[in-house]
Length: 222
View 1 (cartoon, one colour):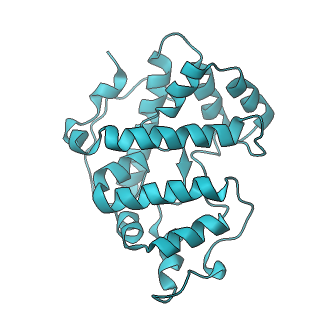
View 2: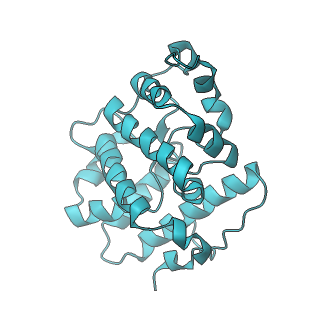
């Protein structure tokens, strides 16, 4: 019996193919950007080792990873303050580059654009789904939903350094994901995905009013 069935059934109306299918497509692009043969980035830690593990995976294993129930990229969705600069531009102006944090971009503008448009759509039409799939705080849901398309385009073009792989500071977690995807049994990967959902929920609970997402605790969290 898959671990993920223990997710609160009250989210079922917000958690369907209309959310999971495009998110799987984005995750597949994110993984290929991080670990593909042409990749110049790494999730964290030993990038060469992680790329080797990714490239050793067959297509079914890669698809299992991409079907993770949350986005494998974070664009500052837990902190509304990160997005505040986008709203300071005039109504008919593009958000100035000075409003965006500087640093080396890890992902192509085309991928970032699709991620931001997906996040904007979720924030406007499926706030519960945005909070879980993207780890988006309540304040950030409101800020992202109010963004103009021109703001998102400016952000995608500048690709600030805070748009990064999720949990980039945990190379052991990324290695565990890649290793578990290669196993015949889905059990280990499901437990890791469940840990991720619990971690995102814990971050949301720490930042806002209590929201109940009862998920069974697994004993071997990374």
